[in-house]
Image 1: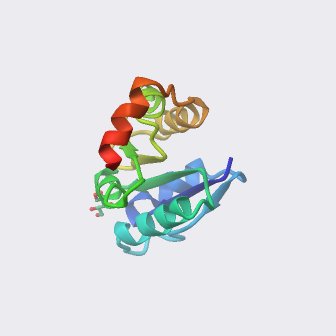
Image 2 (image 1 turned 120 degrees about the horizontal axis):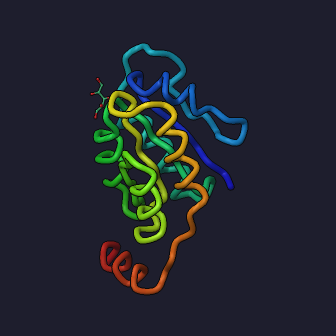
Length: 136
Ligand code: RB5
């Protein structure tokens, strides 16, 4: 699985805590002020180009990143606060981007959410029909 991770300045510390050799780090690389739409765009373009399978986007609340990412057709970004959110985001919504809020959740919960998100398959079936309606 190819996975990109990116954040704005508010998400930098959580991104660093989640860092893994298997994630492509698309920035930011410091806590210097930055604009979350710029980093959402980088990851969404890579995903829509087929360069990656999943993205993880982090800002202060995860709200700005999810708004920015969901403007791209074909992106299904899910802001998750719990493992259960992550499970359903994948199983029912086939989410391809996970959004996290660095100011609204702790690191251990965020790690659990990432694991569940990446390990849960899409169930397809009736859920695919609903996703098709969002894309039409
Ligand atoms: C930055 O201060 C903050 O507004 C941003 O990280 C994010 O929470 C926006 O949704």
